Structure formats: C-alpha cells, structure tokens
Length: 234
Image (cartoon, rainbow, N blue to C red):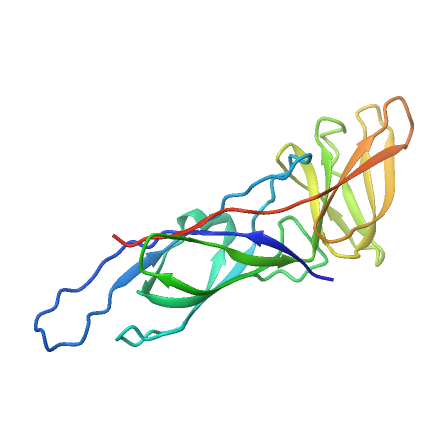
C-alpha cells in the first residue's frame, strides 16, 4: 500500500529572452533554465538522511500557451549529479513530475514518484511536489559493528544484497512487505542474523544488545523527505 510523503525540489529558473523587433510581431519566446537541488528535513527521533541516487524521469507538461507554442519535455536525470542538472524551457505553466526509475525489490537509494500541477515557471515562487513511496530503509550504525565486513540482506528467493554505507550507517532500501534475513558481524567475531519484513516509510535501525550473543534491538521510526521548490527568472 502506498503512503504519501511530501517531497520538494528546488528549481531555479534564470531568464533569457529575445527583444521585440516590431510591435506587430508575436510575443517572443522567453526561455528559462530549470535546475534541481534537493534538500531534506529529518524527522526526530531518527537522524537518518534519505539517500538520493539512480535515474529519474523529469516531465514538464504545458498547461497553457501564453501566446507561444509550448512543448512537453521528458528527460532522464541522474539524481547523484542532480545539483548540476539544467533544462531549458519556455516560460509558461506546467505540470511537473519527477519519478525514479528503479523497480528492484531493494536498492541503495530511495524510490519515489512526485508531482505538482499548474506550476507557473515565470517568477519567484515556492511550490510543493506531493510524493509517494513504497520504500522502507534498514540501517545499522557503522560504530556498532565490524566495519571490515559488509552486512548483507538475503531475500526469500536467496538473492543476497550488500548494504550501502552513508550518514554513518550501513543501509538498504526495500519495497513495502519485502522479507529477508539480514546478517552482520561484530568486531569480536560474533555474527548476527535477523529475519525482517519491512513496511513502507519506516526506518528499521538494528542495534546489537550489549554483552549478548546474537540478540538485537530494532527501533522503528517513520521517515519523511521535505525541501522547497523555488522558481525564478531575472
């Protein structure tokens, strides 16, 4: 079942335009440059920062002509390099979507779909992109386990995945209702294994219990992603 979270993306639009040569000419096409700059808000008590990566499809669908012919834009964005992304469009009103492309059961970045309707790309403005995700995230603090042995997550079909590393954690995103066995080691050689079924929009933080062999505490936190989306032309 999908759950809704807010997600936003900062889009800076820098105006470049043409000058009218004759008053009888049609209105010139004013071009803007759209760029994406994600910024995340962390919800306590978790200090987890969502990991962005992989490819996403950005679509801008015009909703009015504004005296010129506007074209739909569909392009693939590398979210790891999103801060350097730029896309030139004509000033107007657009429906905007940004959707990740990964359909894997697990991955090392969050998957989402997001949308904002009737966005005026012509002035300073902050908008929200409503987003949905079916991902949960599994985390283990790198301070608590043997950092020389990468933790793994084995699905019921016996496919095994290594956890990624970010924000001081080993981590892995998994689709809602995904089940598997997570395995990791302590520096003293003790090995831990835990069967786990995840639910969307939760962080499952695994913590080895002190002075025990194989006993784990699992803390579950809801997570969220927020930012702001600014559109500007000068």
